[in-house]
Image (cartoon, rainbow, N blue to C red; front, side):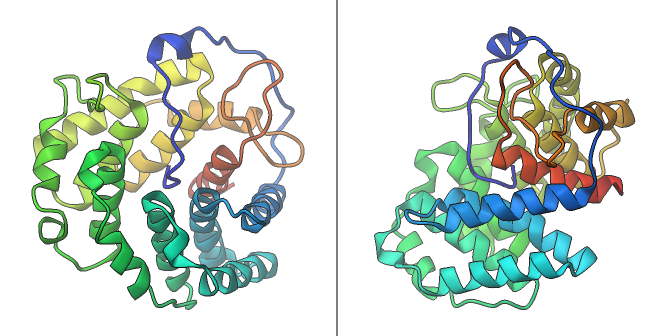
Length: 283
């Protein structure tokens, strides 16, 4: 998820969920955009949800770059004003990462922000203590800055490479493989030009999980993997079938659930991914 909100699911628990029908035919991208904008505005309310803000700013920035949609421009201006008044000293390490990400994304559409204070507080954060934070931070440095990742986080790339299993997944702190750690580690190593063999095995792992995610209705993992694989230029067998399935699960208002199961409710992270995926798929 370019979003940094992580929900850990073991494969066995995912496969136990089943596949109930959820939604009708896919509505237009305009409805998804409006739903994402409303959800982002909810995240700006007190207390703000920094993870939601950073997660949803990214697809809206790319949406604006492509469409110049006035409603998108309006909410991005609101986020810009919100970040300018943010009390940085009150944020924890995860929130600081989210603030920096959101500011960086806004800079891509001419809404620049001074992040010196954020960087100052981030210097005290130990990103190696949580491997998912390490992967996300390395991805940030390698994708959006000119900074040397080894200079910023000495040994970080080697640590990520060392926790990959033979099947291409990455091990969390408890020694178990974790999807979101794996997806973000592959993404980070790809942009940081890590060991090509590690990157290739990680990409193959993501591709290998797609049928399981489709069978289990793990919509968030399926959408995120398709986006990441597309951006890394990895061919995905049956890609159009996966896209067709995702389109069939969109609610009439343009949102989508995190997991495809009875009584599921639309989720902001997955709907943000949907907006980005719709852009990539040309919907």
